[in-house]
Image 1 (cartoon, helix red, strand yellow):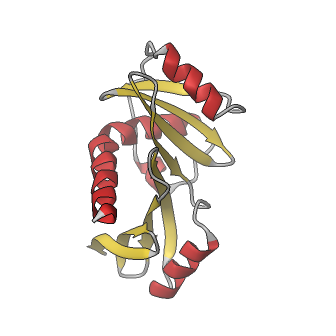
Image 2 (cartoon, one colour):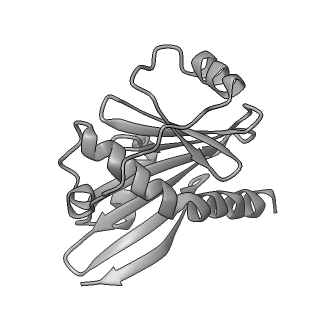
Length: 174
């Protein structure tokens, strides 16, 4: 039951901020050095990311949580703020509430998965190429959720991995 609730919460977080976040992450990545992702090249974002007045508490908490991070961009999201930064070809989006409490960490990059998770995918989906990996962690839970986009000769699949359980959540045939 707890896992179902957690999975539902992750999916709601991911779905509710997906459209807004995708546009902002695309804008961030377009200005950044990760230009080789096939998804990012196809997408465009015409409006600039607005400068926002971020809560001092959120900024202080961010500096405590991520001491060595530079080049941070902040945007306002529903019920709080999101900080974007990039390190080692991994884009990270960190959400804080308006009161400065850490809510979630979403990371994007092909090299995020552990060896065990990668092996699980390789065993389940032979001859599939990993196109993109997202890692979602809600602050109050230890579990990380991986959302992996895979491509093979006949389809494009989105796979969700929670606690060693894998599920295809979306598939498009070519």
